[in-house]
Image 1 (cartoon, rainbow, N blue to C red):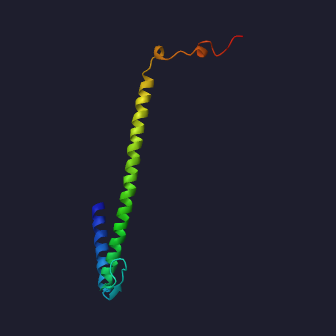
Image 2: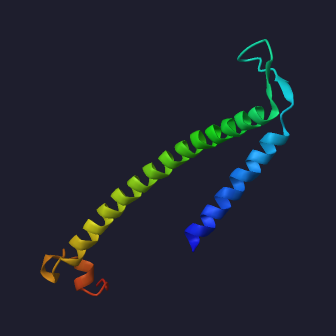
Image 3: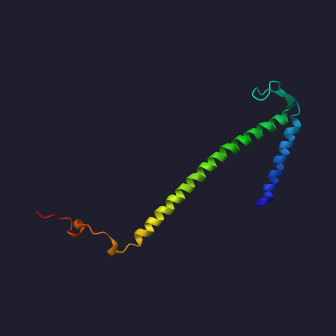
Amino acid sequence: MLSLLKMILAILLVTTLAIIGWNNTQSVALTLPLVRKAPFVMPLAIAMLYSYLAGLLTFAVVHLFQDLKLRTQISRLRKENRKVSEELHQLRSITLEDLPVNDDAVSGGATSR
């Protein structure tokens, strides 16, 4: 059922984009000073497609850096978690005989004068 819904939505999206592209056939002149001095002359639908692809590429690059940052943080936290778990395991396995004896603890903390 869900795959049928996804397919219907995909068909509607492609159809909508095709209609928008078909209705926007007038030419536009785009000037990109960093790339070229002369303007690019192209149909509006192609200019819209290029704008969309540029935004998609920008999002992908930003998302890639954010993903790498989060993966590094997860790796660091897993390493720290592993270290704390090992320490906890060592503390749980200590017997009472292995504990260091503190003189204050044996005398009850009271000092004689």
